[in-house]
Length: 231
Image (cartoon, rainbow, N blue to C red; front, side, top):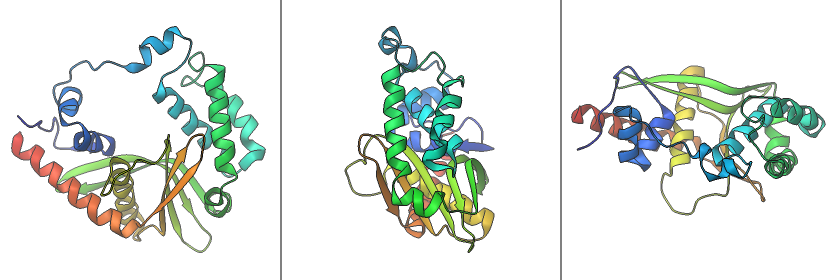
């Protein structure tokens, strides 16, 4: 049996992405309210290290605190982030060093230099929402950069490396819905959408916002229709 939507009022973008990739897991976590095993408290904790989700959250927090300051603001951002509940006593020193190296590489990239460092306004973890078939689609954009000339750029940070395969992947689906939220809210399609992969090799993948919006919104509408019919 297909999962049904718990509430017709709103759904997070991450939940829709989860549904696309893992429909049974979506049913357990979002529909039936079952307890889902949290890998942050597995064997990695016995080793004094955080899980992948902790490392990703820490990297996001560091970038939020760095903002437009670049390398000059990295040391202070790292100190502040390590005092946060997301990292204090959770991450191992080697994991903190990994994130430091990854963020350092990103801060020297052309994506950061040409978009984030020189933007007029930078909003981190920017909350967005829009209605689709009567349901509020909600999310947070990792970085929304607005330039002096009015251009708007959406950036989404991921840890790891780009995934192989054609078509609309989970990350592209998410950033497509973020772009639609920007289009609805600001009245213009973002001038660029970029997936930033933080890892041993920082990789910035530029995407077509127009193409992403069309595919992601169509896919989201299909998912909502299936959920509604199965309820």
